[in-house]
Image 1 (cartoon, helix red, strand yellow):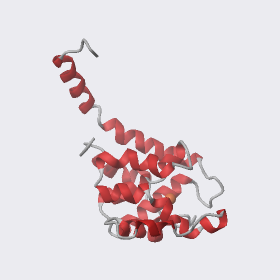
Image 2 (cartoon, helix red, strand yellow; image 1 turned 60 degrees about the vertical axis):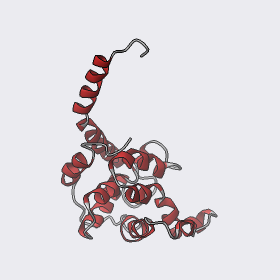
Image 3 (cartoon, helix red, strand yellow; image 1 turned 45 degrees about the vertical axis):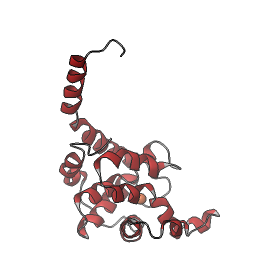
Length: 175
Ligand SMILES: [Fe+2]
């Protein structure tokens, strides 16, 4: 890099910008990959992702929230214990801050339903009371995410969400 030129960097920037659609496509492939993960739940992780996003959309959530709902557990492809932060970091440049926080801290809110069975504090969400994104995170966890394990629920297909994913990941709003 110490011998690179302005012209070379201009070329790299142009190429990188024109390659941006691969981000959305890669994430759609990752959601498909979640179909290989069930880990004892009543639906696989792709079905859970589709069901969470469908519930959000049917409740009138906006596009960033719907896409974040689809991707909120995509980090499980890599590592379950820290999966919320993996997904949140993927989303961070492309969504507003409250949507990032909704995903980053979703496990603290989900804990209400099962942390007692794991010897953990089920009220970890209490530490976030007063945050401007609290209400959205609570709605996400209580109304969409924790309910999205119903094998009989009529979810939309991944193709339904594809244009939304490509739009949200078309351009980073921040670094
Ligand atoms: Fe989830």
